[in-house]
Length: 135
Image (cartoon, rainbow, N blue to C red; front, side):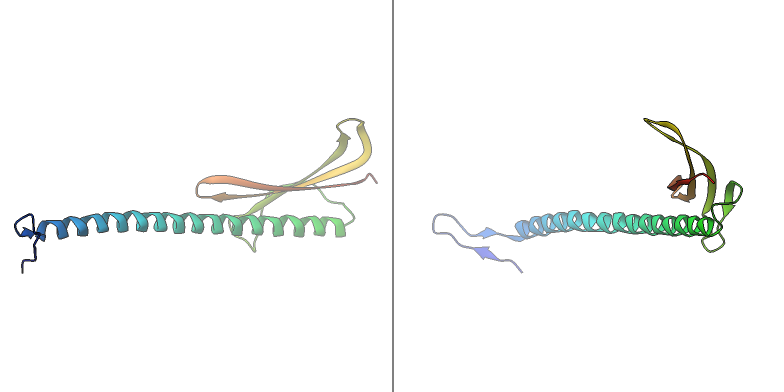
């Protein structure tokens, strides 16, 4: 079916080709918008996954530090201990004498707990420290 537009100055003009161009432009705009939306959703999924792992690491570190504190800050240093509750996560605990940046060595110890995991092929770490008087 042909649509003709009549103009007083010109003879009737066909719009068939013009409609096809409008459809192609609309598809191009729609494709660009959909690609933007899909990439935004994908980025959001990665961020949510990363924050989930970070939250797990915080929970592991705080739980292990609380356990250490309940034992009156006694125990040997640990390295690469797997966490049963969270597969893929491991933690290390190290205690040393605390040295203040300005005042030097003090009568205090510092315990660091570092939680490690892999996220999309990259090794990630979360670390907490606790300073307490030497016993």
